[in-house]
Image (cartoon, rainbow, N blue to C red; front, side):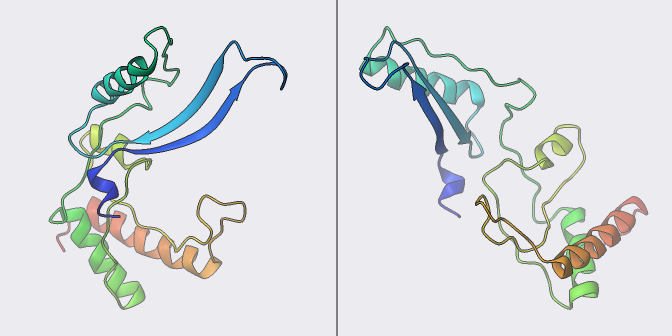
Length: 162
């Protein structure tokens, strides 16, 4: 995961084009999901992609059809943030252990909270087959997660320190 945070990650979701398998297609549509590390903006990545495509063929039209509110720069909450300490305290109280700390390459709603000045971190149940057909969690993990999150929220709103 540490390497993912240093690089732009890309997933080619779909590729479609043409009308029949025996006819050269007049168009190609590709859907791509990118996750940006800290320090690279959506504007920069847009320029990089256009430049690479135009190296191959300058006549190729490149367009983005993503709602502006979804295109966001990378954000983070420092490990020293009060919310992180409160989560650790509540995790210890509920589970008997500190949470495992890691980073995610993006896609969480934390970025929206951080953009309006509210510190945010991710904490959730263990996910099985993430992103797959049978993605799932256990009910026990869901209940445990809810207890930790609720304790953290109440402590945060009460102004407590870890």
